[in-house]
Amino acid sequence: MSTKADDDVDQINELDELLRQLRELEEEKRYVQMENKRLQEEIERLKKELNRMKLPPLLIGTIEDIVDERRVVIRSSTGPSFLVYASEHIPREKLTPGTRVALNKATLSVISVIPEAYDPTIIASEISTKPNVTYEEIGGLSEQIREIREMIELPLLNPDIFRKVGVDPPTGVLLVGPPGTGKTLLAKAVANSTNATFIRIVASELVRKYIGEGARLVRELFDLARKRAPSIIFIDELDAIGARRVDSSTSGDREVQRTLMQLLAEIDGFEPLGNIKIIAATNRPDTLDEALIRPGRFDRIIEIPLPDSSGREEILKIHTKKMNLKNVNLKEIASITEGFAGADLKAVTVEAGMFAVRELRDFITQTDFIKAVEKIRAQRESGKPADLGMYV
Image 1: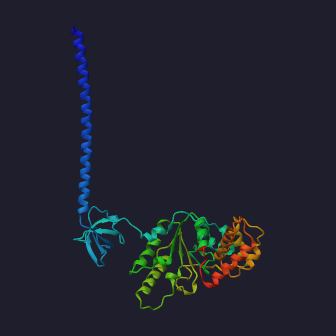
Image 2 (image 1 turned 135 degrees about the horizontal axis):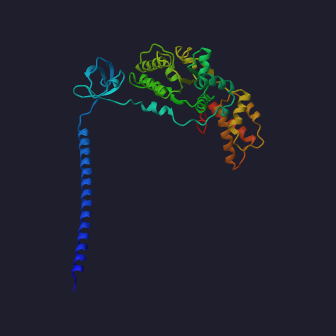
């Protein structure tokens, strides 16, 4: 038989249980409300995104001139120029000549400013990782190394000395010489020894099919160098765009000449290069335009000749320092490789190693080197490339 006290306890327990359930329901309600709010925001976001996707496409144009606060002259991507209005939400300071903008398709009014973007060729030309080539790994070019360090490194590392002397630091260096003598290798060593941004491009990449495209790439190349300054621009195979200008009736030749003229203007134009240095390389200096190689553009022309006997021996020592040699006289090998470039000598060391590998030996002999020299010489005379490709 239950007492009144027991009934009170049961009622209290039931009340506690009801309160607990109420709290759980309130927490669940709050969670559902928050989830509902999140889903509503997601729905709104997707609706806005859908509306943006339904908008008509915008035209791309470039500002040519500023007329007043809200009127600008633009050149559309289709060619002609127009006087149009710019949207009020665009800050006035962002509307400058040369800025790329998005245009309304119907009225051509300026809707927004497009962030500056470089051509993929120019973006890819910036070297993010330093080459692992040092001056110690270049043989037979001690004088050339001294000259290029004076012309390129010294103005970047110690510009004060030029101000104290009262002379302008040199702008550029032109490396000339036969293929395989180490022109590109020398540029890699410069990139390794400085903290400057290194931008490397092959001149043929600046030649484009359409009018003005090559000149635009040159402008973007130097603009990137200015923004990444201090920087070094290395233009390989300069003769691809730097050939002497002649009267030509073909549109391709005229476009190459336009690209050359833009290069001339960028190197020695109204806007100073500052701490931007230029290194160019070519094996056809006789074809270059006179305006390109005059002082003020390329202040020093450094010849990279075929190495002499002592230079060849030095190069062989560099390439064989990690090889397991047995009774090898590198001086004798150097004496029988007259006319060989540095790339040929590297090919000789690789071929000598391959002769040892074929015979399952873990060392290289003088005979291996002599056979390698004969093989590379035969390939040179026949004009066929070496089996293992490039050895630069």
